[in-house]
Amino acid sequence: MKKIFKTKHETTVDLNGADKERVLVALFKACDALEWHVARVSPYGLMAGIGESGLWRFEILCRIEDGLYVKSASVGRKMMDLGENEDNVKELLAKYDELKHSLTDEEIALIYPQLQAQFLPEENDPLAPANFAEYNKPVRTMDMFIPRENYVVTPIIMMLNILVFIVMVVNGVHFMEPDAETLYNWGGNFGIQTVQGEYWRLTSCMFLHAGVLHLLMNMYALVSVGVFLEPLIGKARFLTAYFVTGIVAGMASIYTHPQIVSVGASGAVFGMYGVYVSLLTTNLISKEVRKAMLPSMGVYIGYNLIYGMKEGIDNAAHIGGLVSGFVIGYLFLLSLKKADSKGLKYGTILLAVVITLVGVFTLPKDITGQQQVQQDMAKAYEQAIGEFAVLEAEAIKAIDSPAATNEEVIAQLNKGVENWKKSELIIAALDSFDMPAQAATTLNQLERYVSLRAEQYELMVKKLEQKTEVYDAKLLELNKSIEAEVRALQAPSAEEAK
Image 1 (cartoon, rainbow, N blue to C red):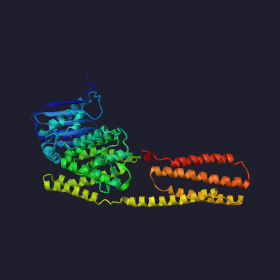
Image 2 (cartoon, rainbow, N blue to C red):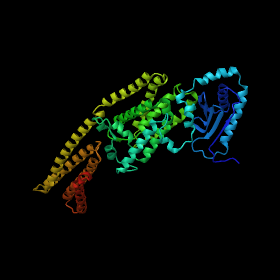
Image 3 (cartoon, one colour):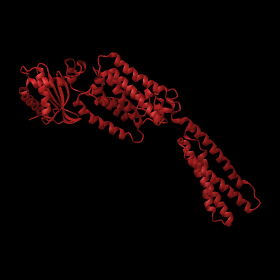
Image 4 (tube, rainbow, N blue to C red):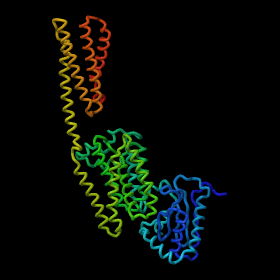
């Protein structure tokens, strides 16, 4: 009986004297005949996937050395094997044996050079002798935290993000939902402040997260792209792309909404996806890998951009990082195609850094005229409140001043009603301003106060004109409501009470 909880099957068979070129071509044609996706070819073998493009259920690894090593492994969360991996290996070897004997020398001479054009440099080839033992060892969760050949920058960035979060929590920052003031104090990107010279916030914000879920989502996305991209472009380009796209993402956030505190690695992570997608559109990566990866990358990016439209998510940073990553990917392509040119490699890196720094230090001090808007708003607010104070004083004076006749009292009260109506218009105009929460609360209180006062004066006029006591109960109720509003207006705010 087959073991159902075995998630891989591997075997080694004799080459029976066949040369490696014949073996590789036969393996390639066998995978093609079985409609498996060949993701990578190497002088030492190939890797392929079984399933829909970008959604593999099994990964196939074939390595040619002293013998032919073949492994089929379940991908993702598939835990019940049901003997499928063993069947995959048997099916491949059967098709390989069939083709190995039927291939002509002419076919091999035609196909092998086409495969050879897709070979990676020896140091980047996971099937090369120096890399294979490391590549083929069992994957453990802890492995994602351990730097190794071609995977150094990604785990270091991830560990730094986790370490910063732990330090924040130890120092009293909320584990799930830290507030904006706390994130600002720890180095969050606050546009109005950043453009005044605190440019370091564009970098520090990339290592801060608004809760553990925010952190875990970003680190998962970083590892998911880093494990593919870092070996492809190398440590120096990867590190440069990460910080450049993260900083550009921060600038995009500032231009879009300078009054919010923005934190998180997601802008830089989107940048790395942008780099990878740009390279997937070129011949630097084999057609089979492009066909497998582009759809899944597109779905991931599209979903997250749509999800980012929700309130509270800084989608401007996501888009800024993604677009800048796409541009940097094409910039780095120049040196990736000429891998031997160190000057071109570091020249493109320096160019990306210089352009980014120029962008940072030329950020306008008054982003989108925000400071002038705030100053104009404050001046208009003060002027309107001053006008209201004058009208209120005149309205109250109307009922405090002695009057000789009933008609004169009514005339003074009507003048008071007119003043309260003007006050209502002034306060309604202030409602259109985008003011802080405390000022908005005060305006709402003033609006209720003025409305109550206008109603009080109108009833007093009716009482005098009709010479009746029918309005007395309502006037008593209004007096109590007005007193309550006055107490609320005179009460200190939460900030003042501290």
